[in-house]
Length: 215
Image (cartoon, rainbow, N blue to C red; front, side, top):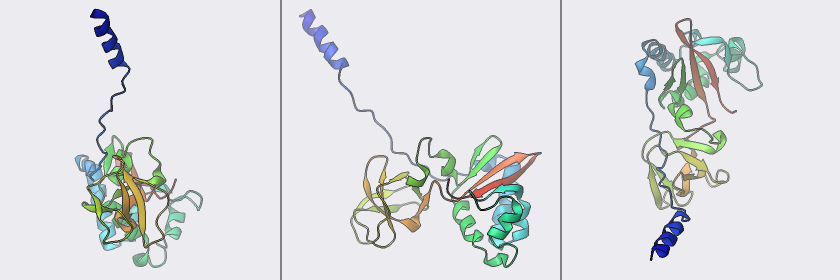
């Protein structure tokens, strides 16, 4: 009898039990509000965006700002690249700023990241293949069309690319961390390697040292 019990216990140790893994979701948060100096800088940044005020924006940017992986560096090149020296009101920078400023801010000591999920998505993810909805309650659909059945309602779920964006309209085939796959409109997604703002604190002042896309 004892031999049978021991054998049963040994058999149990050989079973690989499934590990419960919660789906990863990263709703945008404003962690940066807890630092008064950073909060003040971000209020100025929002004001610059709302007024399309190039002078105010440039006052918040470091002289050695990184804005490209190969097409120049520093504030002077930044100004030319975004056409802030000609007709700043029509610069494409305002649209890009607006998208990321709506997605929260992560704070890690003397460094801050916008959007929030850029620093909170978790290590080891492929930036170009990782996405998050930019609004709550986004439909993950079975097929790349507006009237297709809904697989799941996404609430800030982190998504991974499955193949390439569909040629039918503007859809991306993605899957959740729960392995639920489907299609989402690309205009409702932000890529982890998309535009992000990185700020750092130097000599008591918070300033933008990076506004870049890609990797």
